[in-house]
Image (cartoon, rainbow, N blue to C red; front, side):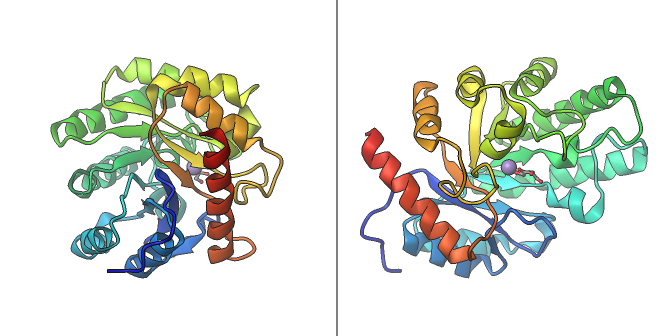
Length: 281
Ligand code: LER
Ligand code: MN
């Protein structure tokens, strides 16, 4: 049995990328078993997995490591398939749209097995690909409706992540996300809100967390400079309070730059959130 930390703060996770990626805001990369051991030893309760292609992941190895360290996998990220392979649910090319739909559907069995929410962000919302926003949003509703129906059949929930204007052309704000949820009309589709994007796009993070709260399935935490909470100017005490007020009892998943180092960024994140948990209790 791995050394259990003296204190485990529940619902805290960090994003681990199962394979290398040019996407920078992931503190931990590669050898999932080792990363899980490292994060469990710090005291994390969860590890979010950023997976480009589920065919590359040894599912049994992950399940065994998760059980050994008594840690959860609250969510699976899918955006690297856009960054590394150009998959896009709103591509003007029907062949790419079909390949993107198939990649997202291919995540469902593992997500169902480990009871993780499947995150849909850049792989669907990064670009209109030269089309009108109206046309792209139609493709979003169609594609996500198909995925939601198949996910529901496997007991998987889908979390749509609004992403800032420099990375997304279609779904940037909480209100964009809520509008899309209403158009899809599926009970197993909700929101993932990321404080880094909210700091760029929302008038008030607290007000937007309140509006998004009833649909909130997962949360990404990063400070204003995309470093670990506490390294920038966001008020995480207010953010945690807003999440509590909204009745959110899911995971707080750190998705931030590995600065000053992967391990140090995770340690500082854990320390910051532990302090907040102690003071907000
Ligand atoms: C993914 O969770 C995210 O926040 C986006 O910035 C991906 O680039
Ligand atoms: Mn994010």
